[in-house]
Structures are given as structure tokens and as C-alpha cells.
Image (tube, rainbow, N blue to C red; front, side, top):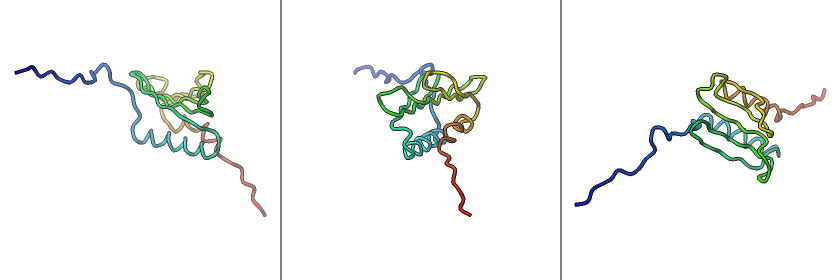
Length: 114
């Protein structure tokens, strides 16, 4: 009889960083609101061993307007908001504080009649 070999699976060193359900819901919700406002048209998600990234594009053929990156274990904060030119715009330990500058773009001033 033949020898049964185990199927090669991911080793412990090949694990990738990912988003949990709450984080992904928050990112996709923001993306949907930005699409509805006409700011973004496309997105991409990247998973690497050291980081997970959510890329937001104005148009698919351009560089991303923002990259929201999660790097666990970073002392300055696991989350970073990175701009189009690659500059770190904001870094912190909470996803909400990283998304705040983007969400401010969705606020509109409403004039009261009276």
C-alpha cells in the first residue's frame, strides 16, 4: 500500500495579519459611504505576514488616495493612515481615531431656516 503524505498547510511562520469582523465591517462601511458621496470608486485588500492593508482609490487606474494599515506589535500603534504619496498621516492604537479625518470629509454643514 502507498504512503499517505499530509497536505502542505500554512506553517506557523507563514501566518498573515488580517482584519477581524468588526474592523472589516467598519472599513467597508466607510468605503460604502465614500462611494455614495462620490469620493471613491475602488478598493483593494492586502494581507502580508507583517501587515494587513485596505487601499482606497478615487479611480482604479491611480495610486490609492489612502491606505489603512494594521501592523500588530507596533509600539506607536497598530493602525496607520497612509496618504497617496506614502506619508504617514496618522498613527494610533484605535481604528476609530485613524478613520476620523476621512469621516470628517462626509460631514456637511446644514443651514437652519429660522
